[in-house]
Every structure is written in C-alpha cells, then in structure tokens.
Length: 372
Image 1 (cartoon, rainbow, N blue to C red):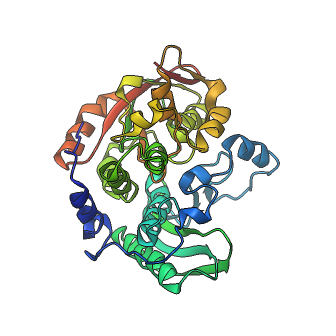
Image 2 (cartoon, rainbow, N blue to C red; image 1 turned 90 degrees about the vertical axis):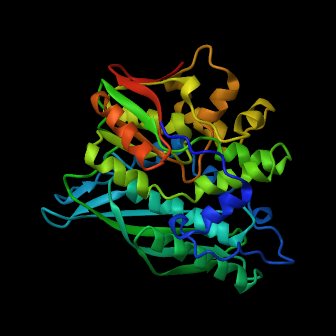
C-alpha cells in the first residue's frame, strides 16, 4: 500500500492546478457576486444519480441489442459501452453529467470531467475525444460557464484526449458533464463481471467525498479536509489504470454514486461470486468518519442501502463505517479484483509510482457482499 502524506491545503490546490492534476497553474477561478452554484441545486455530484434499484427496474424492459460487434452493452450493463472496430481496436463510449457539488465553477468543471473520463479508464481504455453536455440558467454570467468549460478542457487534455464541442441548453439547475469516446484492445476490456474466487480486492482512492462535502456545509470539517476531497475528485484514474494494465485484472469498476457497497454488489452479482470486505481496511478521507459519527448522511446513502442492503451482511460493523461504505462517491477510485498471487507485485508497483492503493478484501464462492 502507498499512502501519500497528507498535504497542506495550498499544496493540494497546487497539485490540483499542476499539469499532472489537469491544470495550467493558474489560480482557482472565482466569480464575485455570484449566487452559489450549489444553492441552485437539489443535490450535486454523483449523489444526484438515479436510484440504482429503480434503474434495474427500468432496464428490465429493454431488450438487449443483438450486434456481433457490441462487446459491452446492457446485457450486462457496465461502466461504458464497448464496440469492436476490428481485431485490434474497440471504441469505449460513456456519458456522465451532474449538478454542481462545489461553488467554484472551475473546480466543478474539473470534477465533472474527471468523473466522466474515469469511466473509460475503468474499462481498460484510453480516452480519445470528449463532448460537453451542459445546462445552465441564462442569468449566470458567461464568465461562469467559460470557467467550467475551460477547466474541463484542461482535464480532458491531461487525460490525453481532446474536448471537441458539445451541447448547451437552458435549465434552472446547472448541470455539466461529458460524453467520452476512447479506445481499448478487444481482448483488454475490464468488465465488472469477471471477479473470481481467490481474487484479492483493491481500492485506489480513499472513501468519503459525499460525507466530507456534506460535513463542510455543516461546519463539521474545515478547509483542509474539503481541499483533500477536491484533490481526490480531480485525480484522474489514468495513472492507476496504466500501472494495473499489465496485471490483467479479472474485474474492475470505478466507485461512484452507488457507493463502495453498491458497486461491490454489482461486481459480485454479475460475476456470480461473494465479495468479502474488511471494514477496518476501508480507507477514509480526513474528516469523513467524524461527519458520519455526527449522524450526517447524504441523499445517496438511503438509495444505496435500498439497492444493495438486502445483499450485504454487515453484522457487528459500526454504523460510521457502514455510512462510509454506502457513501455516494464522486470521481472515486478503481475497485479491482485480480488473482491473489499478483497482489504483492501490484502493491509494489503502486508504491514505486507513489500511487494510493489499499487492499480491502477478497473474492470467494457464494453470493452478495460481506462487510466484517
């Protein structure tokens, strides 16, 4: 495991705006006199996702498309669709957008872009091209929209892709995201349905973005904790995916709006296995457990419990850790299942690259998820 030292708030924002973090080195964008972006929303970030349980019910009515070259579609659904072009190339296509979860327009644009781009990395692919999907009130200054678009474009370039256009409509609630096209070798796709008994389970980012954001709004955490959460939400999963690729993982997904337990249940269910997660191994952002202990929960928490709760066994686990495991994440890390005999080598490679990695559990015969 490699756990970076906790940087100062200033260091975090310097990292955020560095080329490696997807920025140009300029100062964070602020707009004086602007009504807060989050004040225009009901709920922001990946917590705004439609309920996973309701999505399952909705998609039951769709007949899977029969197409020889559609390698990944709705049967089963994954982090992105994949279409085979030839024996060496396949397209990865994804779409993701949500309302603001922070008030700084540039930070919002960077987070939204990161979240969308990470779906391509979660499939084993490399982003190629992106288009903006935007909805904003006409009353917002164009300076605000420009800051969102510019920061997103920087993050797309940091991922090795190009932002080549998009579509913007009027809406009372601001929303922004990307449609992203990438490429992957047809034999190099990382499905979430391939976990096998005996695999080790890893996570590449700490948990708790939803809790920290909610806690900051209630003055339960300070600027440093918020800055750390922003740092992780604007960290592309490309570097982690690059290290992981030679290890040929059996299953990968990124942890976003359905929380760790929701995404772990998806992986277990589609792989026909049981996933066992060690509660005391869960990595938490600074302040996240403090917020959970104070009883704060985000809007995504009850929806995620409704989706996965009946498939999760968590006897004896403290409620604060359960809240962390169900917390809706925005631009979260990769959840990785790979043969246990590769675990030490993977940890060594992540450590050598100074990338975060935490072993959180294992895969076994059975069904559902066990948190203990």
